[in-house]
Length: 492
Image (tube, rainbow, N blue to C red; front, side, top):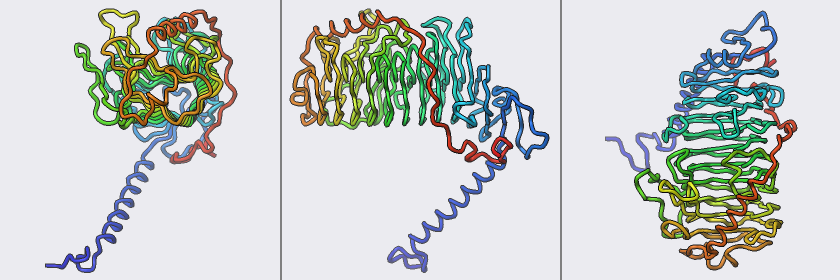
């Protein structure tokens, strides 16, 4: 028998053996990737004539939809500059494709505010996995009415209103979505999906939210370098939790900036829950909402390193839902559980920098209302300035309101290390509600805070919405042909 002393078998060290195996695995992976790239098609969309000679596996199309229809996993759809008047739908058989514009600002998919009976969508990825959309602009795809369906510019749709996860892998980079009218619903949207990333995205002019993530108790997603402005809500995230990070982004001049929330009945299953680890989502017929017995928990839904400023825009488009939302707030936490808000700059929001409140939904309460608490959230290390200038009774840097409905359980929220320049409610919030405390009680601001929230809702209804201006050019990909096989003529 060979000796194994010192981790060796006849001169073969464990370390060198692992290195050799790693090298073999890497080489094998490279062969697989190279083989896949050589097999992939490149489907080019151009409004001009196709070149007379093309490399193998390069094909030209006049419409984006025709190019998508001819694509399968690993294929690229490259879109030449131009304005494209079409709706695009990607379905399951096209999972794993890349849709990429050659210039973010010059490749435009234009809905033209067409008054279609059911509304329209720009790009819809329906129950398709691992689809990338990059480096293009989608604009002016509208709902038929302010509260109608569709009106989404870019939508990864895992099965809206099913209450189930229907797809995984949604990826977007260098995307612009905007609407200059009143009936654009959502800019960049994903629902009923897990595992994704958005980077370098922009949205403006939407009557619901610039970007939206919903119906994923365990989202497993990152949003980075987003700019959301001139929307009813910059970000909305109904029943989206678990591993979800929004960071290094800017939310400016919306009616309200960032609003993860629990919701009933839409985008099931509720509630919004940012705690790490397995979840027990609320199910109709059960009254088991999350309970946290301590402030000392691990949180995986994180809002950090963002600029959240001047979210006071009552001229932004709205709909019957968003017109009822409290306005003039930087970060709202309606019925949220176990989220972490840290290291953000929160400034010049006229009502509140952070507005966290218990959320009976629907409200006023009926026999179908769920009394979502606001519990176990942590707000730490943020810089507040210039907030709360409206003069409202609870205007200031922070309002934490809860413990008035349901199970009296809006507890274990905590605040530490923040820089405040305006009032907080409760007062001296980093003492009794400081994160140095293992537990914290219900807020003590009473029903007067509920009256304040209703006043904000009523004020929001007085708005006079107008279409928002088209945005300036946004940063485009430095090399849109990166990773593209066969190098078609558009890459010359």
